[in-house]
Amino acid sequence: MTKFNETGWNFDNSYAQLPKSFFTSHSPTPVRSPKLVILNHPLATSLGLNVQELQSKDGVAVLAGNRIPEGAMPLAQAYAGHQFGHFTMLGDGRALLIGEQITPNGDRFDIQLKGPGRTPYSRGGDGRAALGPMLREYIISEAMQALGIPTTRSLAVVTTGEAVIRETELPGAILTRVASSHLRFGTFQYIANWGTVKELRVLADYAINRHYPEVEADENRYLSLLKEVTKRHAKLIAKWQLVGFIHGVMNTDNMTISGETIDYGPCAFMDHYDPATVFSSIDLHGRYAYGNQPKIGGWNLARFAETLLPLLHENEEQAVNLAQDAISVFPELYHRNWLSGMRAKLGILNEEEQDESLMEELLQMMQEHRADYTNTFRALTFDTPEDTVLFGTPEFTKWHELWQTRLDRQQEPKESSQQLMRNSNPAVIPRNHRVEEALEAAVEREDYSVMEKLLNALSNPYVHSPEQAEYCTLPAPSNRPYRTFCGT
Ligand code: AMP
Ligand code: MG
Image 1 (cartoon, rainbow, N blue to C red):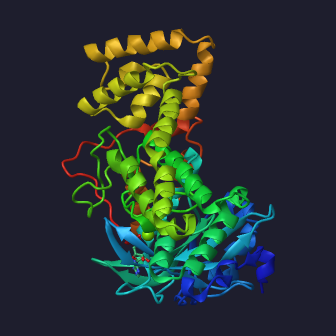
Image 2 (cartoon, helix red, strand yellow):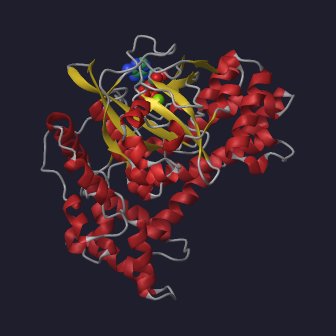
């Protein structure tokens, strides 16, 4: 029989040492017949896990929640959050933190099962997850990682052999999620609302220790924490915008302290450029539309800042001033990150004031002509403007000339610009129709080859290989807009 330590599980449980009100110890509910359907080999190896052992019966039992590996202390985390602007108590309703894996490099990662049965925070839910949405999270989170965007990762998906009831009966599954932590803005909101200031300090110190140890000795380390989180979110959201990623449910419980993207429910990538793009079926007013993401990022940071007030200064008014100053830089920070990313997408190696209008003009044209976001930048990268719908229009011809003159003003050789563009404009993104096609093959026909091929194309989006070409094609025109769903 396999021993767990042969698998390489090497757990520490620092979260379990925090005050009892932060979580509830709770075990997964065993499932009937677990079957491993996808395992992330490179991620497993980097975590110090043995791929063969993980695939064994006992290895899979752990990924299904049927066995608790030695050293693990499963728990559900308590948190709150603003959902579409409304504050509410939440918590891990269908997730359990199994433990923190200490990797051979000494790094610490949360290992979390998503879909392991009811927890004390499940409210009316069944605590379970369906196969399609778990595979979807796997595909998109791994694509984000490959695109160079901070994100939680996906280690494995197992099917449970049990059905989950949604609108219809669906095959049940459990995803193993890996994150540098699951601390959320909502974790702070929970303690700030229902805990003591002493507990809040414990949480903030824990977050600093885990994610921002460099500010530990600062005079006002809680203010530094706020500033650093602000910086990371300015960077993160700029990266989303630059690849056309729409998170879809930017509730404060889905914003991490680490600055990693989390909660791949209703997210999707934009095809034609339009700031009003919304995919989520429940986002009726477009609160989380593509073009609103930076503004919502700022709003969420304000909610996080509020939780820290008692730690920032003993005088409330001064605390508020400090918090406001710290987060007021967010729009500018975000914009600077976006500008430098957009310069790279256009092969611009230095800064000129007019660059911004060059970008705005391009985006304006793309919006008017419903130009595909990813493919337009790809065509510019490979100097094939005839591949975009903008080609032939007088305004694009004029813009293209202006852009070329801009690049000609640079001292560096043309190849440097091209290289920068290749590294900044992905060949492939997880296009909605390709993701759906992969999920359908997996869920309807237990054929995982379509998904594996897609994952392979997504694993190196900046290599621009011939095999990736087929993933650049757009879906056939449809009258029905693409729709995504939360909590499925
Ligand atoms: P989300 O929209 O995924 O951020 O989830 C919001 C809240 O609903 C979180 O507290 C989840 O744990 C909870 N939740 C979502 N789906 C389920 C489910 N099937 N069973 C129990 N809780 C759930
Ligand atoms: Mg969530």
